[in-house]
Image (cartoon, rainbow, N blue to C red):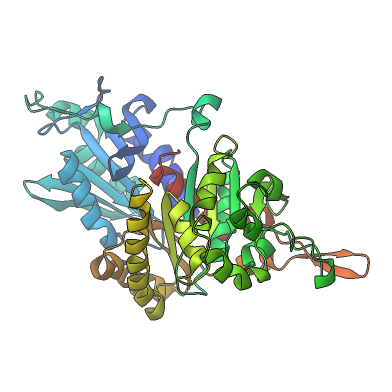
Length: 462
């Protein structure tokens, strides 16, 4: 079996076609000697490989028995990920790390307090270079070079999270794992709605029960999930039952009553719609202190009905954004990485600081920031190769925020799926679809599949 780099179009295919189907078998590793998607605290590894199956699962401070393998999107520059690989190897006392985007393959070796490049080749050379790779990190090589375990063995079984072959939680477990994610940036036009609806669809297709709540008076998510089935406001059927009613009434308008099933995705997703009238009720709701925590109370009543709740927020520092972040467990920040969006991250951090103080009074921990999601990114090859890595690196350096591995590019399919309509009588009615339903084999769909996978990993729901 040979490897063909051109068949790897995304990170998922680099993982499956290069690492799982080609490298691991060629290097002599059987399925019981490697683990995929391994988490140690804040560290998430694509693959952790052992020359021998270790029971219990341990990492030895001087043992050469383990290899970390990290797969990246073919368009990503490997140089942008070397620092992170070094952190993995140093933190976990792993001797070797393989880093690849399918086009290039690198092997780094831990040497004292640093790592050094031990091998590099192009993807189309891997067939003729496989013996060199095997000489470094092949299973038999590592077994022959192994030493006795150090007495300072560090057992990590207590805080590891290795996915099993069956990823489906039992019904009892699912009833206690509902997670609430707010999607927020105070700069508009950064792809927030696109992120919310397609991430929701991608997570739903993984078997999770999903509720989307639109807290933006522009109601873009309500449109994008296909709940606007009228072309004239006199036929408006959501003005009397939307998120405003949920927030203003303690005894009425439960989430079960207001949520609608949306067919923009298969399987369906539940959606609580917003409405343009929401903006005129902000002052009234602001005077009602209970409205700030009403969403928390009502979500508590449906905690056994959903696995994931995604809150779409307005691009502002207003009451509705505040309500969402008070109620959420996690925050995802989509950004096109342009100057104003980047400067807006300062406002986001200040906004969170104030809300976290309020959460503390409610005995809620600070909201966990999943990171900045690069969204609406140009597909221009020069931009992707040279400019994008610099912009991604600037986020943690300047603003102290993590950046997600997944990148959502600005693709035509994302616009086309949102603009779909259907004819009903003499009227054209909006009938949007998620990109995963509109064109499931597209690059845009694959990117949202990767995003769903990464988000679920980060919130511990793989």
